[in-house]
Image: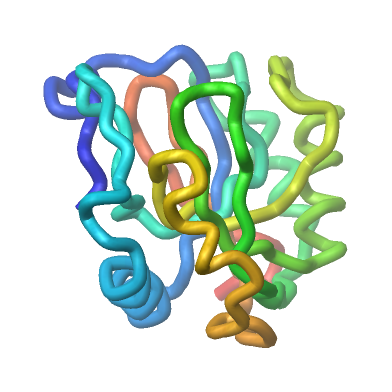
Length: 183
């Protein structure tokens, strides 16, 4: 289970809004089950503020760092996109300069990358990274502790259809935004 921050526990606001693609429920449950079976609890990174752990809202971030609280511009952009499919690749990691590694599943999809750039070019946002690397975070672990998972192909080739994204407001509200013809 992902350890919630004190902000999340008490409903406080976040520094930025973001957009994300949530995985279909049954697929998200499979990802969480696989993660719990393959990442030993002793490897899970946790700091004094309980901000890290295993992810419990399985998603692929489209754009983080949005300064706007409401999705007015983002909604217009999303409404111009048609549904598309993405596929998953291998298990990899971000080795951070902090005290943890981020274990992730790489996500492949040109339309997803186009959506990221279109939103980023249209809304006021602050980016910490210059290159967008679509991925699904599985969890935060002690450095090097889960390197045995790197290159794992369990999810490789699995696909799912993206009909909508979620605008996660800095106030904590989650607003679904559907693509054109995105039933």
